[in-house]
Amino acid sequence: MRVLSIFLTVMTALPAMADIVVSKRTIRAKEVVSAADLEIKDQVVPNAVTSPEALIGQEARVALYPGRPIREGDVGPPAIVDRNDLVVLVFDRRPLSITAEGRALGRGAAGDRIRVMNLSSRTTITGFIRPDGQIEVK
Image (cartoon, rainbow, N blue to C red; front, side, top):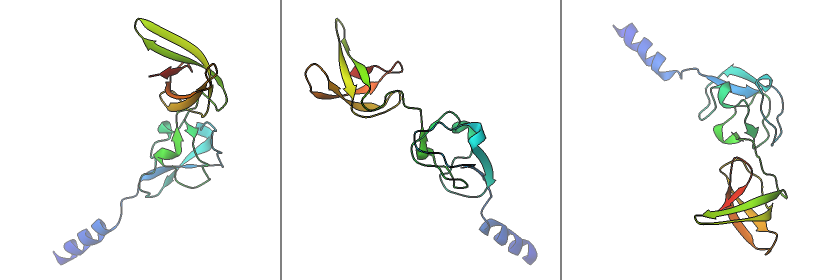
C-alpha cells in the first residue's frame, strides 16, 4: 500500500506532456504562416498553441523564431488594409448613406478598428474595416 501511495505522489508531481506548435524557420512579422513552416514539439508551455490548424493562414504579428513556442497573440487574421492605402469611408444610417475617400493611418484585418484621414476635410476619424476593405464609420 505504501508503494502505491509513493507511486501516486510521484505521478501527480510530474507535469503532463502536451504537444505544442513551433516554427521551423524564422517567420517575420506580417508574413502568412503555412503548414510547411510549422512542426509539433512535445513540451509543456502555458498559453502555447497546440493545433497547427489554428495557425495556418494566419499572419504573424511578431517575429516567430525556430523552436520557440507560438502563443495565440503572436498571430492574427491577415491584414487587408495597409498603412497609407486609399480606402473608401462609408457612413450608412438609413435613409442617409455617405461615402468618401480616405487614407489609412494604420493597418488591420477585417473587424479591426483603424484611424483614417478623410481626404476631403483632412480630419482624422476611426472606423471598422469591412471584409471588402471599406472602412465603416460610426
